[in-house]
Image (cartoon, rainbow, N blue to C red; front, side, top):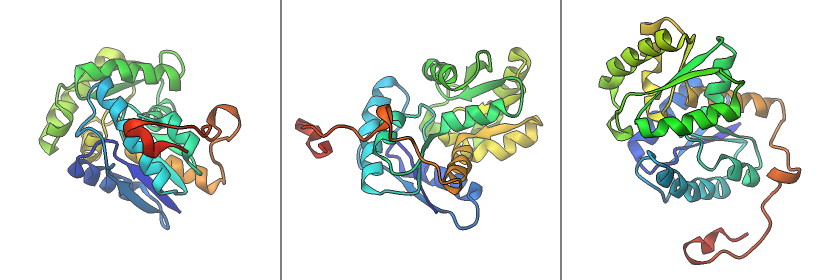
Length: 237
């Protein structure tokens, strides 16, 4: 099977980090196609960034049909719209990570990048999870493009605080750029630490093997054909 993994920002180095995590998680016979959009922000750290990332995500889905698609940004930008376009299932990394966390403990905490992104993480947890499953969202205040292997100590220290303060059992990494920190953080903390990229790839594989895709009925049916103007002319269907 072929899984398209979309980095919704336009930074190639981050796409490489995402691709490495996706390839490591994928099973035999799964081809990972990591995509950097042709348009969008260099990183996604605000509602404005997220909104302007969506056209690039949708263009990637429309231009390269795959057995499944993964949206590799923790805000899950464009997830619902992508499901209207795709011929296979579409999984967001926050969605996959949070669902996985609920299977591994009574509660989880998110460790993310900037404090301004915490509200979005809480909104997604309210959508995806049972009440009170997400015990807290904690910000390292490390910008997305400043994440590196040297960020591990800060991430682990904040995760330890989250486990104690929130009474949680699982840590969810709240940025695709943290994917390469997951194994080391797990070893340091001794609890499940979830990288959403890996979780989304394995979930997408499972749905494809089961022969399942997004229901085309009603809300997720293909969008109605209509005229788009200006910069969106190319998005008309």
